[in-house]
Image (cartoon, rainbow, N blue to C red; front, side, top):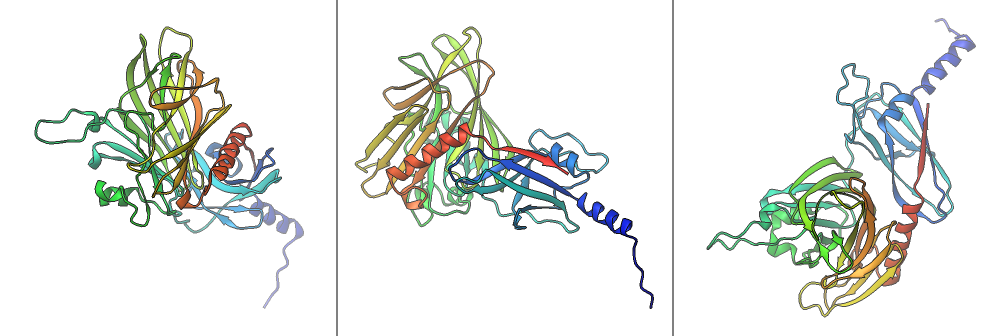
Length: 399
């Protein structure tokens, strides 16, 4: 038997080759508060630059302690094709980290693996629901939502008794479990998901209001709103982040025709969704848009008591019910210029220009789900959301 000793140069070269199979991500945070379940989004082009040839099904994401993290690679804004098979035709890489109070920086690695990495359990989900009159529903591991499509707005045919609701308001499904429930609840049906059978319930009232986060054009006295969404598009669908768009056809706002596209970004572990609403109109240089919360959001016969908070960039509610627990709703609008109200809604107002997205955040929490058990806890959640919005994370990628 012979023993072969590799030259030092060869050993160093081998080590360098191994090191080249890693990319390092550094994320900076300038907010002193704890930030649980923050989604870190990296353009895949940056990963491909630092780690050429990495494929979405053969990578591992690790934190600074070597823990393997769930991840997702989306098809948001990808290159269309990858004819050379070198891993360029993807959109964005997502993974999560919970920043402790005062934690200013966190580092992660992306490394190639020989074996295929199986998909991770979904914590976010959205889909079009044709079996329930064109609903569109979405959820994360904290809360669910839905809104309404063209079939629900269509007139009833004589003798059929079809439900009719014309609204662009947004609904809440309060869940008490962290796994997906949208498909199960639609399968159970309307008469079941309006009762808590162990997973939560649909007890939020939308009606003619904006629901929890619907929009409209505000002229200082009246709110001009669109109809049910006209079309939808899913851009990413979990397990960590879901992104979709709803298109609202033009409506008349005091003589100005306005249309809207809402982009929803739904992240795991959060009470708030990120909203980017783009309004298109001609004529005025600016319009004022209001985001609303229903003044009467409780289920029937609940003797609701509502505490409303109007604090600069945030509009909040804490709703106490007779038998179905308490819940909070909120809108955080960083560019807010005013607080208002109409017959049906509490409103928070901001100026918009045609074609430029308005960013805001809509949130909800039920005390029986455990994410906010009191009005004080909900107010802290809202304050944290406002702070997160004004202190975005910053990430760099290096080989």
